[in-house]
Amino acid sequence: MADALAIAAATVRDRIGDRAGGWDLAGVLPLPLLRELGAAGVLCAQLPEAFGGLGLSSLQNGELTAGTGRLCSSVRSVQTSQGMAAWTVQRFGLPEQQRAWLPDLASGRLAAVGFSETGAGSDLAAMATTVRRSGDELVVDGHKRWMTAARYADLLVVFGRYEDGAAAVLVPADAPGVHVEPVADPMGCRAAGHADVRLDGVRLPAGRLLGGSALPLPLLVTTALAYGRMSVAWGCVGILRACLEAASRHAATREQFGQPIGRHQLVAGHLADLLVAEQVATRVCEHASRCWDAGSAEQVIATVLAKQVASEQAARAAATAVQVLASAGARDGGVAARAYRDAKLMEIIEGSSELCRLLLADHALAVAPRGEEG
Ligand SMILES: Cc1cc2nc3c(=O)[nH]c(=O)nc-3n(C[C@H](O)[C@H](O)[C@H](O)COP(=O)(O)OP(=O)(O)OC[C@H]3O[C@@H](n4cnc5c(N)ncnc54)[C@H](O)[C@@H]3O)c2cc1C
Image (cartoon, rainbow, N blue to C red; front, side, top):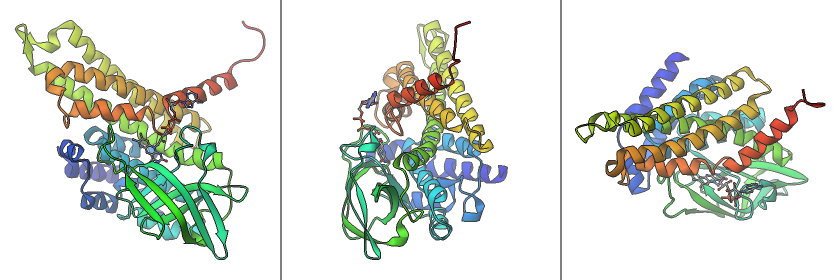
């Protein structure tokens, strides 16, 4: 598997190169690039080989994701969506659904995932999208918002209410009744293909209901989001590495007051802060991925912690990198400016910082020792 990781990482480096700034300014990624990355298995690399994936461990997939995030948060966002879609099918699909869909997702077919709605952002229990039976078919009605990669996707994994619980359905993006409306001018990850998706009486064969029966909504969304959080956390490690490199390079070469600015102690302090942030985020992500790979019960809370720490460190570090680069970092499309806009959004998605803190506080209360102090 080490070889598979090395090949996938080289593919990412080679295909993205230094083109992310241009894609960011244009607000779009080349579709052939995404298909190529998808066909190389890079976009859902943790998928087992039995389903056509690369079979990377969470730790290996994390390093791959950080490599993508270091170069381009828009491609990394597509990678997160594709991985989350594949994980949802793997986790909840019947064997025949896994066989039918997973090899496609590992070979260039692109997917997006829809939880959020106007009235259901942080509070996904307020989801209003419905899936209902009509004879041998399913009918889906709803309006999903901000679906990453929906502009590029062939397949939409849509969560909604079903019978006395909830379900995820696999909706072809070109099915009658599906309307994909691109989000105009997103603040960051500008080329990630965000779109609002309206589903008006979309009719599907019954076999597109994952697992074939209703499931509790919290189980469905928590499971899917767990993958998304791990992926976003590693993507933030990539942003941190890009910021550390850009700031260090600049501080070593830009001279003011007769010496490189990195020799001025206040600037040197910024560089130390960036290194600490990158190391802290890397370590919490490694710990969470090891929990995934061991199937440990700590996996859920370790993932929330990783997402919380890595996204907050990345947002702060990106601001620091812009400060060190000053006017050299103050143009759109550059590494620091992109990181500044992209990292801020990472504190919002897959469970905002506030929601993550609430989960961490619940955990602290649950494991707190009971009884008399001392
Ligand atoms: C770049 C980007 C990509 C996205 N991609 C996807 C995607 O692929 N699929 C998808 O389904 N959705 C996606 N989303 C939507 C995203 O999941 C939501 O924006 C997110 O869940 C927050 O919901 P909201 O924006 O409605 O904010 P709100 O829920 O309205 O929250 C607003 C503020 O209030 C705080 N808040 C809310 N409730 C509480 C509480 N109980 N306690 C404390 N604070 C609280 C929040 O933390 C936040 O700071 C994306 C959004 C963005 C910006």
